[in-house]
Image (cartoon, rainbow, N blue to C red; front, side, top):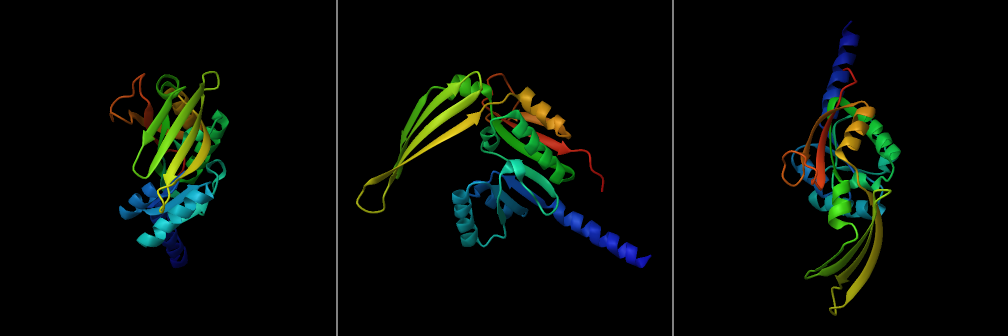
Length: 234
């Protein structure tokens, strides 16, 4: 029937449009979100920090980009449809301190991916926290700001606590304002992440060392993973 054919065409056109949607999960201030929008993707940025999203909205206003920003926790995020790809970078997933939280987030990603859609994410490894930055203090002096970054690593829980003190120069008078933050991140291994990807129903495609863009090594500090939705049908 013509009516059924028309309905099917509308359905296929809607799916084709959703295939161009990319979700930036843990988008922060929207830097990557904006770059991908400039590359021609229909972007959705999701973050649970209202302060960071406010900066992202200000960037959007200045650029004129059409980006949808959502104030949501990645462990419970909701979309109006499916997306062709989901990205999550800058160690956003390391802020999830339990495997169950990672697993739940991955299941949601799989649920909202277009059939055959791609999930790209990075994470800091146990090696990085344990051998490189754990129990280390990092300080840097810049023109407009300075910071002190103190790390404390719990090997049993694979959790790194870092206390960040930032001194930002005021616009007048040359005085500095002091800000402090405490963050907790958990290190994961490639084996853990691969298992969690597959448990969520996705296909593990590849993993690369974020620094060398080559094969993952025992000394890899940050790893990129590419996974694929493999359960839906059009």
